Amino acid sequence: MVTAKVWVLKKHFEGFPKTSDFELKKIELPNLKDGELLLESVFLSVDPYMRPYSQRDMKEGDIMIGTQVARIVESNNPAFTVGAFVVAKSGWRTHFISDGKDLQLLPSSWPESLPKSLALGTVGMPGLTAYFGLLEVCKMKLGDTVLVNAAAGAVGSVVGQLAKIGGCKVVGCAGSDYKVAYLKKIGFDEAFNYKTVVSLDEALRKASPDGYDCFFDNVGGEFASIAINHMKKYGRIAVCGAISQYNDSVPQKGPYVQVPMIFKELRMEGFIVTRWNNRWEEGLKALLKWVVEGKVKCHEQVTEGFENMPMAFIGMLKGENLGKAIVKV
Ligand SMILES: NC(=O)C1=CN([C@@H]2O[C@H](COP(=O)(O)OP(=O)(O)OC[C@H]3O[C@@H](n4cnc5c(N)ncnc54)[C@H](OP(=O)(O)O)[C@@H]3O)[C@@H](O)[C@H]2O)C=CC1
Ligand SMILES: CCCCCCC/C=C/C=O
Image 1 (cartoon, helix red, strand yellow):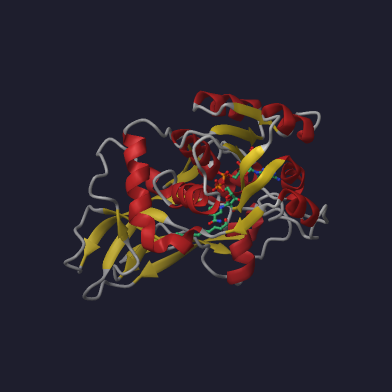
Image 2: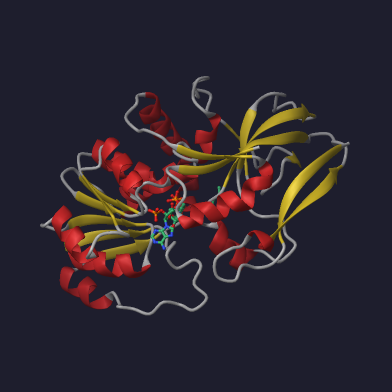
């Protein structure tokens, strides 16, 4: 008999999540039936979407949603070998049972030396968000100037590097000087700390006096309202995330987008990465190749210990992570 530890949403978040909103529980797992597997989580992901999705899709007492890289420890399913690693969507659990239907094996070309945790970041859902958001929503093309916020995070850092591979000028902003230095190190042409600039408007103008063709928006709110005025005519805005609004108890008020959208004839499109579920293999193959070739650099903020999951999640929402926020069990 295996005992799994799980993190439960004890109380719906009100404003910024608190550690007391979570509860650690133990669950006895039953014996495996035919066709089933027992898995242990090795790395778990903490992501911004957990904040709005918990509000929309979860009730108090549910196990927190999320993905992990897990190792197969027992298998009654001939399609899965003990010792293999998979990406699963089994929530915040140390151990779980699966019938294999929802599991994704890591690509067979995954090099032994490459951390498997990257399957939750650059070579996983966040990397794919950057890939499809830039190619399909921003319609990025050679010579474009691309703006991205939350640029030193899991999605943003890949957006900037893919835009450089695509022959664009890239401007990024992040919430600390350390993050800004990292952006310059990984090839951003311009980067600034949005928390310390005297004027966001001036910082955006200085970074690209001619404006922006593409804006990959991870943040929303005030930043997006100012950035929209810096778009070039016919610019494209990919509305990927709105992390500056996820913890609001009272919705923020405008300025509103209509006037700049009309006069600059902009295209602004929200998206969710799962729209391209049927092309994940293509995206993962491309991302893995760039990582292996050293064309896309990865950084992870690894928190040790399953018991620290709530802390890692809250820390990521506060901006404590450089690159992808990961928990190592
Ligand atoms: N549409 C889709 O399919 C997907 C959307 N997303 C969205 O992409 C965005 C980035 O996600 P991800 O890369 O995983 O997360 P990150 O790794 O970028 O971590 C979140 C970062 O957001 C920044 N941040 C937090 N609060 C604010 C704020 N009030 N204003 C500005 N920045 C803030 C912090 O960086 P800093 O120090 O720079 O402030 C923090 O490090 C999120 O909005 C997320 O919801 C993610 C995946 C899929
Ligand atoms: C494999 C899990 C897919 C999660 C999709 C997350 C979409 C994110 C939206 C905003 O953050």
